[in-house]
Length: 271
Image (cartoon, rainbow, N blue to C red; front, side, top):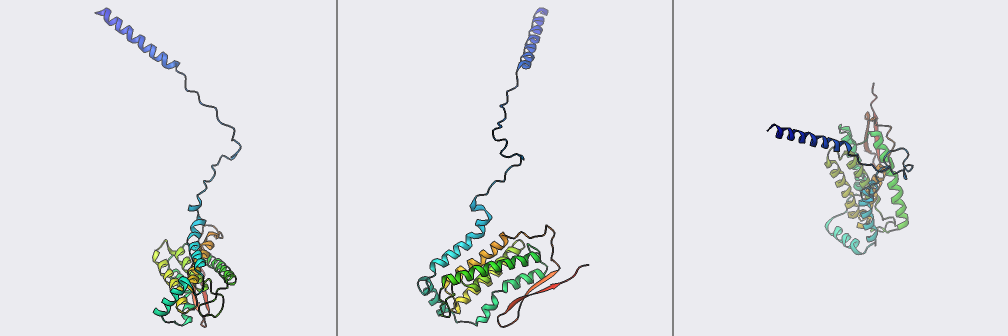
């Protein structure tokens, strides 16, 4: 019996020794040499920014909807023909003209909403100075683009008063203001934008009711207004850092009579 146990002990010790010996002799896997053929393409070692697809880019999101509206307006801009003729007959049958002073004033009503909401203490996306800069830039883009197209298109108005019908400048102005209101307060509530766009759509309808524009004019005008606002935001960089400024400045649209809109500014100095 002792001989059997001795043989088992010797066998186990030999097997264990053989196992550790084999483990010790196992060589680690060889790593492939580093590829240095492109080492100078990015010498700083920082990862390059991944370029977004065009359909997901800010530029595409800014121009997609306005481009559809402007294209539709341009395709249907045939004067008193096609869908313009049908819509004119429908509007004249269902509605009566109203005072043109009403739609002349209503075009800046979204700015009244912007001022009242800001004065009520609702913080906008940008501070007031930067919002004013965006408004000024958007107005410049809108006026330059719409009047350039007006003089190039030479579309006669439905009432025959002149040949500056396409696109509707009143509609472009209203939708520019509505887009700014929507962008500034959409993080607080979507209803601010809904109210502003409802006003802008009313302006477009009034321009057709008053026989001042064709349907193609107001659709394209809406596109020019929205596009101007989007481009103003897309190109705006002058933010003076991250510190919010201009909260002590009050802004409110005013109406001076005789179709003359404007703005009033108030400044409350801080200690």
